[in-house]
Image (cartoon, rainbow, N blue to C red; front, side, top):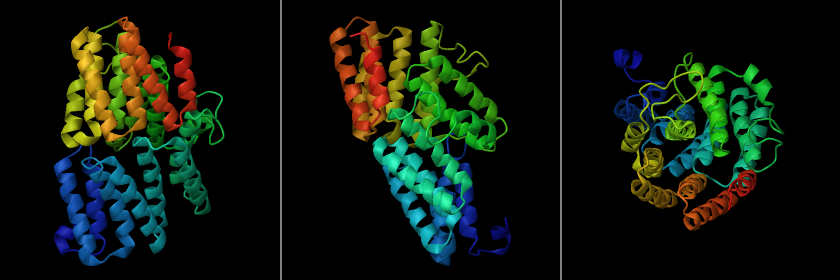
Length: 359
């Protein structure tokens, strides 16, 4: 408002970058967000506001992640981190570092690499007393450790990096939402759909008092859809059934929501839509449609190169063919899933899948 009333100043680029960030996402105004981001970068260039460059590039990179390939965002976040360290904008540098770690996770970067980067940034965040950024990355580190088999229980975020019960009690509400997203994802990955649904319900309750939902460029919605469909099928109810024992997701239409997500960025989400469509077809008993969608999802996931989602597509296809008595195809898909989880570094998931599949 001050910029519009009195003209541009150095701080204007940061203001427009913040607006861009607040508007982005499925629940925002993507067109307005993109425009505000463009203005922020233009004003940054014109004003030579080096002291705000890390802040601006960090926020705008988040906006751009909705429309550009996710791997570009890793580079942009790391660049923002480096600029912040060079200019003394430590808060922005550490926030960018945390974002870099999360986008590595979204992209399926090998877990040993993610673990190494998380540890490096956590050490730096501790040195600069950046508690919030450190706590964000600590959650992710414990997720990686759980997946790698370096914790007693892969479903509980308790181990070397953190204690789950203590974290939930002490963390801010926005971070608590992130905790529940990752908890629901872990539970889904290990086939504990009731636990996953409970975590989704807890997150939705926490979101009522937050200013912005953590959408994580479609990650949250995608796994909400998969959890919803798996829970409904497990209960042998209709697709409008209750996702958890606590609250009904009225008006929750997985395919329609995923299509909206693909409208923003097909390259990051086409495989996700295809997998959701396959799971819907499976639940409806549409055998041939399900086969076509599973096959297409696997190919699309391979193209985008997200290892753990390639693995999930194959695992879900394995479940489908096993349920329909096609042992040969089920074995093939499970074998591919195990190989992909192994390449990702998720030894705990490899062990879990080898124990669970009755082949």
